[in-house]
Length: 421
Image (cartoon, rainbow, N blue to C red; front, side, top):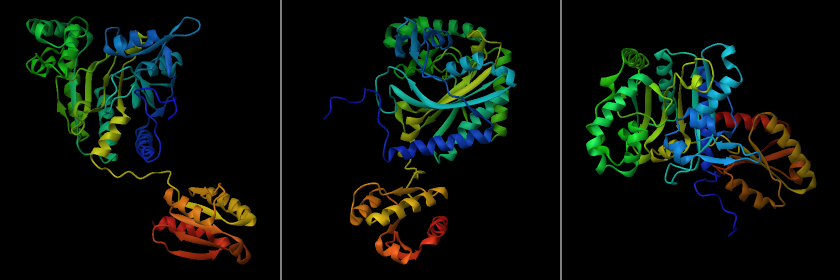
């Protein structure tokens, strides 16, 4: 066993596990294209102030979970713990507002948070996210939530539900926080350590505490303290979701953990995942771009946790096919067979056939065993006999059927066989 092992809270992704990542990422990219989103890729490291100012100095992420360090010039840098602040920074810095509004952007990549590793929670984790900049219309919120709903349906997941809330504007929320403090004050001595700390720093997070659930059940609802603007926005959001035929539940306890949210907040929960049930979440952030010294720009977005979605797929026993499986394994014998195999593999790949050419010093029996381990659909054999007769041997690895055909027809016949499958 080498002393060089992976860092706690990270994981290696290989073998059969890769097919889940391909399935999820390809499904997302195809759907983003259908919905008119453009991809954006931001750096993994950013100035620490971007997150402390954008996410909120008193949030758990900034207080306890960020990977922050000084570089060689003494500048404080942080591995990005979430995607929205980075995309907002890129939106401002690259003047994307000049390209017209709204802008619909998506990203897929790793995030980093120092948390206790457990099922569905890693210190390096991957998210699929999207942001819409430049519109305050509740139809944007509804379309965003509809995308998430469509995405999980396309993944063939069933045991999930969409929950929505409205947490008001900053002004109305400040009034609600005072009501919450009045409610929680007499309960404070019996609350958990996190709730006691958050009482003065981020009191709305007491509503989604996993320990003091009973206390949260009887807490005043934020929906009773919304300003007229937020109330109308929430009414219209529900109207549009019904038009999209997206089932949802209103849950006043959804507050999300970041300070930049305003009005819409939503989550998607999967019933088979226990404490890590939230597989997606997001909301509106109409003041974030301005807080980061950009122009007044409304925004709304979401993030989906890939690792948790993979766990949900496994819990529901969703069959996932690998999109990088081997169609043809090209085996050969002898020097002439080797050169002919190289030519054939080039020909097959040009036709878009997933082709694995034997590149090891195996005998023919060993090549067949290797093809079997790779789950190749077909093995094409080229040896001295085949070359002398200008043919190849094709074996269907599933049925065991073996045929010989003229060399010139190999690629066409394989394409036809694959199409029939």
